[in-house]
Length: 110
Image (tube, rainbow, N blue to C red; front, top):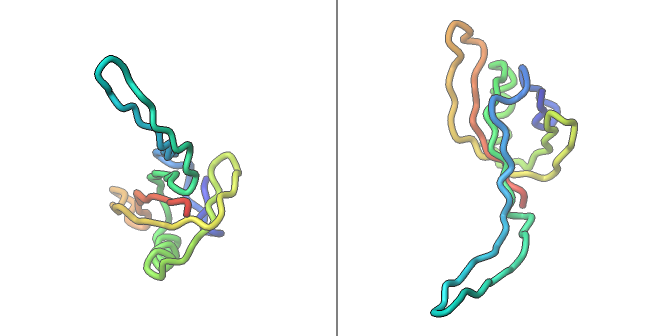
């Protein structure tokens, strides 16, 4: 189970991935390579999540998204991530269970 602020999901996420913003680039040169390294930029890290919520919980999440409110996110390990931007990517109803929705979203560290 995860939480967006205090809004619980139905169960653990279907998918959960943290993309790290590591600003390093290899530059190919004649006779070799050079590296341009600006390090890890933590504010560029992004969570990508797909999870199931009850319709009522979805309504609350939708309001947070529409109002562009920064949220706190508790992952399935219990780690709390604060001040994240919520970006909804897609939504689908669960077949035979119309009171539940599967939501794909991103959480951006800012």
